[in-house]
Length: 146
Length: 385
Image (cartoon, rainbow over the protein chains, first blue to last red):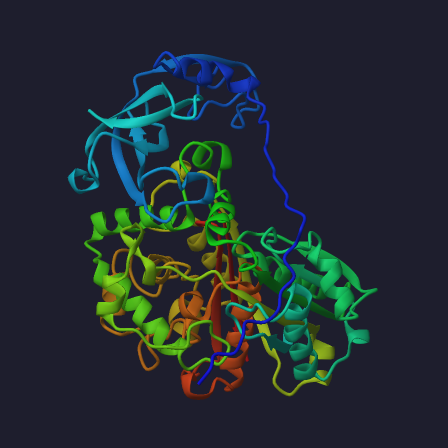
């Protein structure tokens, strides 16, 4: 039995490429700090709420008066995965581990966890958030085992 | 708010539909719903089109779909609620009729996800959370999001990979009985467990496919519904809720708070409890999501979702049959179509038209649970005869 040919299609000749330039003026100290392995974030001057990731506005009390504070990065692993089927712009990386950690200061963050095999990980282990310049030459942050 | 009924349903075959473009695909469902209701385009006063878009060529599908189907000049809107986009379209049509603004309205859900390559499709879905803080640097994917829910659930409640696989086996069993389903073959527990890892601990058979498909629903006021059909299916309650874009801002990972809140509202509006539901379709984009839904919708206690599937309680004949249309897992998950497809399936079940996968309808009530993103949006709808 011969297989039916696939239905005819028209391959579009109009390819679209989108590159966003994302404003970071309200969080620039955070991005700059990462280059020196410092984790800065914001705390509302008025109500005291701590934000991570940093926020230039406090939606809790509607104030825009924020203090920059440095945090330790010490955290506890809450959950994790390892991404094997990767998005188009991440196929150049080996399968990577993504984790959520609860920082000592009470806020959580999501980042890659490096320097450990997935098999050796367990929920509740101590980890630390560190700043660095990533392989693409831009500031980034990731968890490492403590 | 006035009483509103579903008076017509239409559904395309789900799958890799390289034979049709988005407008032609949507028309299959629109035509089906018109024929099912006996209405014509002139009767439809308002149309909402649910489509996520990006993976096919049309930027404004609401206008191209309604042009192809000759549905203009009805009032028109396009809706988005991530994977619950179809439910958002259904909601818009529902409130338009319930408010008295229109007597008859149509919700159309359509998605065409296979016109682009798979890594780009994975990219588009992965970007659909908090792009800046969870994708730009970390490439988190949707299987990855739900994998983190699975890791937390397994760690806290001892849920096993086998429990996840059992959900896939059940949904493939029913998908094999559904002529509209993307996958129409049964699978074994071993096949599911041996499939390759997509985002640990989730494997290929824990994940719904990228599908093309469309579904349409026609809604009418009480007075019009009684003229149109002898088998109206009433909307008894509809609850909506949302949660943070970032997974790291959630209160926990072993459930979806948006589901709990949306379900509470829907049960209250309908005046029913989980035990009154005869059949449910829940948002099983990943097998773990079905287990979370069992718990968050109150079909079992928190942490006991694994046991519920292990005991076979969500098969036909069990305590609460779930996803007996194959679910997103086997029927397929064309994002914009899913919400309307869910309402169509519950309507079919309550009318007693589901054939060999017909659940036993005792109380005359069914539930549709549609999640957008990883609990970013939730729409829970209770329908009744």
